[in-house]
Each structure stands twice: as structure tokens, then as C-alpha cells.
Amino acid sequence: MQDYNYTLIILALSFTAFMCVVKFKKHHHMLTANVACCSFSSLYLYLNDATIGAIVSGIAACAVITQILLNSTGHKISAQHKNNTAIGFSLLAVMILYQKPSDLLPCIAFTQNRLLEAQGNPQYIRAGVAFGSILWSIYSLAHGLLIMAILEVAIALYALRHLAINRQPKIPTAPQASITPVAPH
Image 1 (cartoon, rainbow, N blue to C red):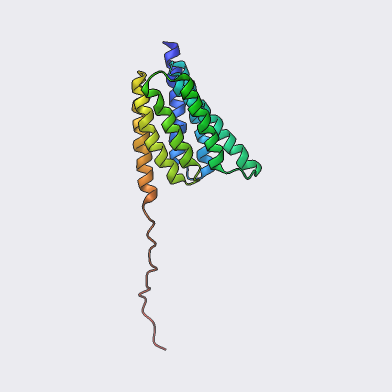
Image 2 (image 1 turned 90 degrees about the horizontal axis):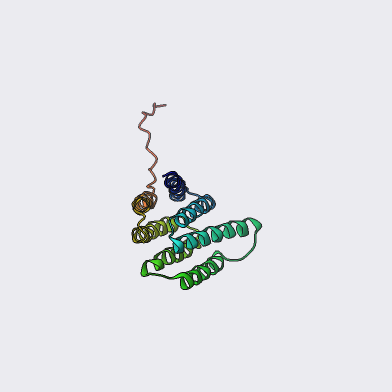
């Protein structure tokens, strides 16, 4: 029972970080929260024998760390190139460890997240989170991780909400005309 409590704490930490990915507005902050989210998710999935998901989440954490480090050093390697390399590792892991059709879902979610993340637009990242969370929830159900599946659906809804809120154009208000009487001279 104590191990179960630890895994729930790890899952809670993962989804707290995941909510931060959706909530943050700056790309760098979103990436930093994503590292924590992917790391905790990888540990949770590993402890629950969802090997493919654990490996894909671990690769995702490494890919995001690499992207943060390369961005901070000023290297001119494109985000698309970095993410394509990470996608290659993810596909390799799935090809080696594939056991059932649901094992493809984390790889699909990972791939679309890397492609959208490479765009550098927070709205694209939120859209990727929404779609990826649905795929992860199906994977979680296939591996008997009901709590994770429910949390993934909640994150998808949360991401869609923030996507809609941030998508609405800010309508500038016209300056109000002053209706103060002008004294005659």
C-alpha cells in the first residue's frame, strides 16, 4: 500500500507540472515544466510496468532538456532538427519494445508534441497537449492505469480551455470621448 501511495504522489507531481505547461505563457517556462512532467510520468509509468510509455516519457524529458540547453548556449541548431532526432529515438524504442497496438499511442503523442513544440508557439503546444493527452489516456486505460487516464482527460480539457481563452482576440477599446463642457472664451 505504501508503494501505491508513492506512485500516486509521483503522478500528482507529474500532473501539477503538466498543468503548469498549459498555464505558462513563455515558451522557456513551458519547456522547463515539461521536463518535470515527463520525468515524473516516466517514473510513474515504469513503476506501473508500462514500459513503452516510461521510455517514451524519458526520451521526451531528455529531448526537452537538450532543447533548453542548446537554446541557452546559442547554438544555431533548429528546434525541428533537435525534435526530429528525439522522434527517431522514440520510434526506435517502440520498434524494439512493441508488444501491443496501444504501445504506438505514446509514440504518436510524442511525435506530434515534438513537431508542435518546434514551432515555438505556446498555442501550438497547448493544442499538442490536448491531443496528446487523449492518446495518453487511451494508453493508460490499456495498461489499467485508470487514475492516470482520468487525469489525462482532465488535462486535455484544461488545455482546450486555455487554448480557447488565449485564442480570443483582445479587442482594443476605443478611447472614450470626453464629454466635458467647454467653457466659452
